[in-house]
Length: 186
Image (cartoon, rainbow, N blue to C red; front, side):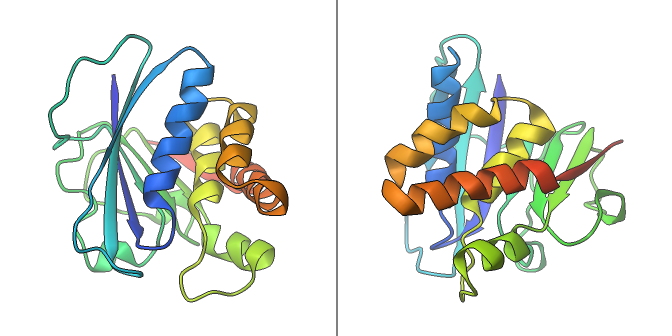
């Protein structure tokens, strides 16, 4: 079983990203469980979402305190929250960051660090925004860097969530995340 924690900001689609990833995994015959954290979140404030993925039915219902992976949708979050809290040794980190993976030091012994400049991709696709839309870009990066789901498996859940032209743009965002992610095995 893989346990994942998503870090984002309110308005970036952190919880939606977890749901779309689970829906994609379900189409591939896997099992998934989303654990959103709702509270006093507001637009721009740090937000968390958790999920589990497995090839077998998931019977656990407890909270995730030691994730195998972290997914960080906003490059500035590492300065205001402890994004590596509880992250398992040998885990993976997929981060929206301009830096190359080899330049990222999270002070945790990880098996893989992946980066993609999702903010720049978002600006090109969706225009400049106070809170960039990075969730579908990061989903493409997750697909490439972990191979937990095929890129094509993300398309239908994205189009279901965002019909019409917005869905097409988000599918393109996932493709660009997939094509532009870089990773380093450690």
